[in-house]
Length: 293
Image (cartoon, rainbow, N blue to C red; front, side, top):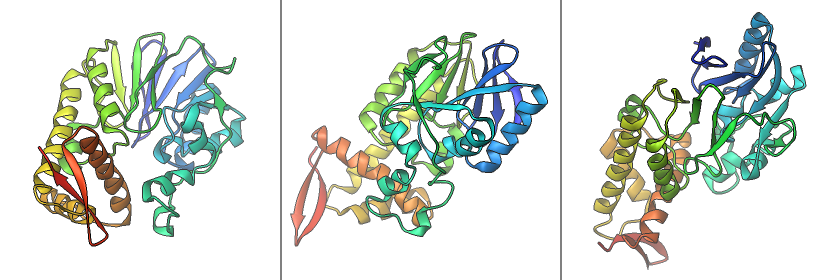
């Protein structure tokens, strides 16, 4: 874990729970692509930088999930580097309490305020800043989170963040986190058309061909959507839908999974309703979802 791997003339990644990319602008100056899930990840990155004699010019954040920005604060404090993001992702990085609050849909209890969902705040600079490395291509990858982006380095290495999961992860956990299902599917269709020497997903193996994995992720979305439609043949409330999905997939409920999977299933329900496949009815002051296909 935390081994440094070179995958292009100027591109590396650190193998860790959420892969950290490194782009070498020259022999001395480098940029990170994300920073890992906590202060310890930041310390490990710092050690690698020192061993290689690299100067950290900045951190390019793909999005604001805690497992991608957890090392930001430590590295910024230690190395006085800029951190780059934009829009709502920038706001979440500067005010990380927004993540557990958003996931829960209200004030988050202490059960949700841990390092996997609540990072330390850091100071963020917009992608439009003059110090952002202009040779890096930003690729919008909306869907998993609000304004997630990927980065293509000049040696044609494409860092894809969380726009898809590995087959092993999907087979084990079944329901990957998605904020906007429509945009997520649009992103996967776009990813299927992209060409690069190497693709680096944050939570899947590095590959030179991403098409098969993108299709696997698309098929998993379709499977979950169809299960929801089946559950809602009779008007069903949200808690019962969530319970049935956990039971069907053999998942174990806890506070964190309730927030993460629950938020995702609400996104599926909104998507299915907006596409005319579900409607809602109110019975005895209880909202229920009903299949109208």
